[in-house]
Length: 138
Image 1: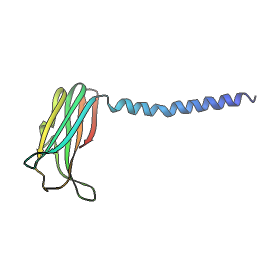
Image 2: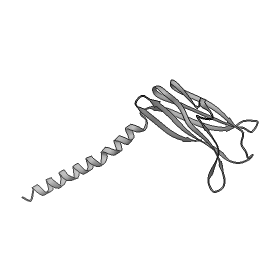
Image 3: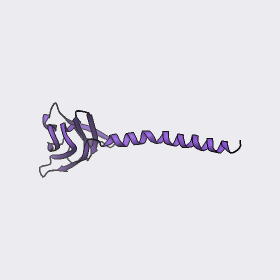
């Protein structure tokens, strides 16, 4: 009778460990199922304008590929303030259809010279089975 307790405890612990690992695998598998690679950079042109470059490569041809938004943010000392947002409504070329890769350069004249800026790009890909997004900050 004493020998059965350690076996039962070991069995219960093994079941708990197996159940705890299931959600981790589901999140990992879902994270990059459509986006193979992506990048975003922000640079300052010689005339003072900001140049935002992003690119995305999908695992297959997508219904839509590109970015859903690009936020231009300025450092305010207390954090980051969004100064302008490129969206598909004001910049339809943020996304293309029926492609497996896409890249684009956006230009923005900053409101404040000498301020620190960054770009927050929301990468977006859509196929028949769903949507994948990825946030990149340059």
